[in-house]
Image 1 (cartoon, rainbow, N blue to C red):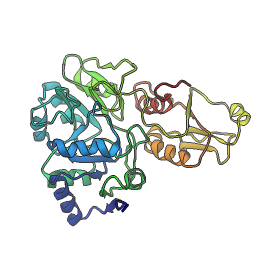
Image 2 (cartoon, one colour; image 1 turned 180 degrees about the vertical axis):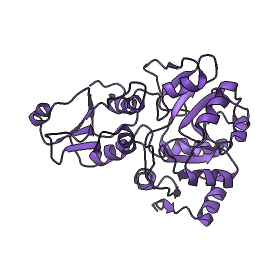
Image 3 (cartoon, rainbow, N blue to C red; image 1 turned 45 degrees about the vertical axis):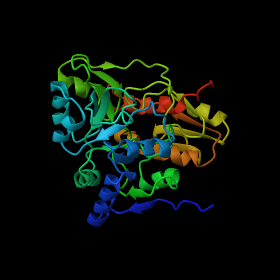
Image 4 (cartoon, rainbow, N blue to C red; image 1 turned 135 degrees about the horizontal axis):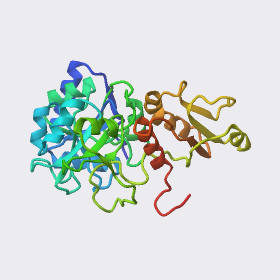
Length: 340
C-alpha cells in the first residue's frame, strides 16, 4: 500500500500565502500559526471542509470549533454580536480572546456541534492575519494535534502529530503565548461566563465590562454531549506519560523517588539538578512558563519517563497562573473509566 506523503512546511512568503489561501478556498486543510497554539484550519463556511478537521484530529463531533476572523466587520457574518461583545472585541482584538455568541445561519452545524451558538476570535499573529485576508473566508481552527493530546506550539510539533493526515503547514515560528485563548460566554451579555481561562484574565474582562464575570463550575462533561466551547472536557492537553499534579514539591520528595520519574517546576528549583529535573522559566515568570508549557511536556513525554510530577503555578489568583493550572489539571486527569 502506498503511504500518503508527509505534510509540507511552507515559509510565509507572498507566493506561499497565496497558494495556501487557494487551498483553503478549495476546501483543503492548512495548519496555521497563531499567537496561542498552532491551529488546523478550514473554511468555516464549508461543512465538508470542516468535517475533514474532525477526521484528521480524531475529534468528536460534540466538540465545537473556534471560528477565526480577520476584521470586526466579519463578526456579524458569523455571529450576532451584542454591546458587551463589541466592547471586548474593541479592547482585546486582535488577541487571545474567544467570544461565544448566537450564530448566523451561514455557519454550518458541523462547526458548532449542532448548537445555535458559535465561538469566534480575531487572532493577532501577523502571518495568519495575512492568510485570513487573502483567503477572504473565516477559518475554523482547533489546535493542530490529535484530539486531547498536548497542543502544538511549533510547525514541527504539528508535523510530528499530523504528518500523514494533512498536506500543508504554514511556518510561523514558536507561538508567543503558548496556551489557548480565553473563552467567555456572552450569549446573555448580562451574565457573562468565563468558560476557559487564558492570557486575558477574568479581572481584565470585568474591568472592560464593568460587571462580574462568573467562572464555569468544574464538572464531568462528557464527550458524548455537545459542548458550548472547546477545551472544557475534564481530560485534555494530555501527554502519554501519566501526570501527577502537586501543590508544592519538596526537594526531599524528589530525592526519595526513582530517576525514571520526571519533575517539572515553574521556576528553576534550588538544590535540585539532574536529567529528570525541568523548569518552565528560569526566573519563574508566568509568561515564559505559559509559552514553554506544551513544548516541555512534549519533550519530557518523548524521554520515556514513567511519570511526570508537576508543581502548580502560583501567583495572582486572577491572572495567568489560573490558565496554566487549568491546563495542568486537565493534563493530569485520569482517562475516562480510570482513576488515579
